[in-house]
Image (cartoon, rainbow, N blue to C red):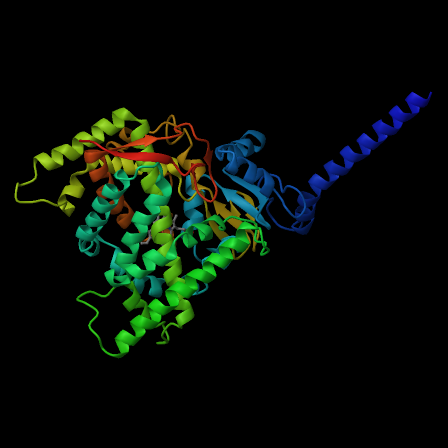
Length: 490
Ligand code: HEM
């Protein structure tokens, strides 16, 4: 009798708890369905997750455990291939779009979508003159600041210096007795390059001072924005403060030089441009804006490039047939070079057809930016589904790059898929699209090409843990940052 009584109690408690969790899990969805009940179109299929946290924990689980694509495949399996899903991430009700035409539509529509990055990113990378401005101001400003690093003519000027940076860095890396973290070392290389391009060689001071501050900033990008000791976001904010302190004297010094009318060289770098530019009303930028922009641009200009460099080397190393073909192309370039020439030139870079396929394939597979974030500025109907005003829209290009419809055997690293192939509109967007298209694309490809030229010809990588698990936040990388030895081949 007694046992029966306790069984009943247990069953009742279990039933109550199950009902409680089911209701709790549905609550978020009901809340938004109720709020939007009078709209003409339904929300896309999907799930709004738990109250307050939404689907963040599920998202983190997939991205941190090295299976980022199952986050989207689970949505497809559950709700069908609609290419548009509702969810709740980073504190916001959100819509995920992962079909080429819809992604293009969002990225090209500045009237109905504005930038909508999570709070953590907005607080860490403040670029007010590029972000919190009207479209016209953004265009005006972008036109003024990008010339130093856009187009082959501008980039040709840096070729020699970039080559020196690469040659010296590789020499140094191969002389190290202990294994190195390849990602960290690639950050040093790409940082030296970007400091040179943005601030001229006079500012090598900044390269030595900055240390790991940018990495701490990077790690905080998709963290939960809690500013309390022990949290990644807190550490990232501290790193940001440190960066401001380092960059401020550099700006002050350049201002003094300009006031004194001192020669700044034959070519203006980004620093000079930032000190001189005016907004559409003729106002110069405040120091705070200049510093924010410099930090933002230095950040954009080296962290993702370093990740691209690391993945290029890993993919080449792990695919010996690709390595062989890429190396043969570089050897051919040397063979056909006139004896009087000793250094790479832009024509030779253009001849690296296979290497450019390797870089494209790396960009597709590594998905350095997995999604771009926008916010709907008005209610919209896309393919019969509602995107409500104020909701975040995640343009999930990663899902397109890894979709077998567009890339057969998408997990396979196969540069030859790019041979004579031009990706259909919206199916290859590693640098985004529309007015926010990354202006650094050509520079990245140039830097990686120069690096791989020397690496393929003279070095090889010995990974210490070739099977090391991958993490995907804030960016995809082996958990050991690719612990390896760079070996010089005699
Ligand atoms: C592999 C390396 C890189 C990748 C994958 C990458 C990717 C991207 C993407 C996807 C965007 C658009 C984000 C959006 O639409 O919300 C973007 C924007 C931007 N990138 Fe890059 N980027 C890389 C390297 C660079 C470099 C080297 C620079 C600078 C020299 C740079 C400067 C910028 C800037 C300034 C923006 C903002 C553009 C605007 O808002 O008008 N990036 N990048």
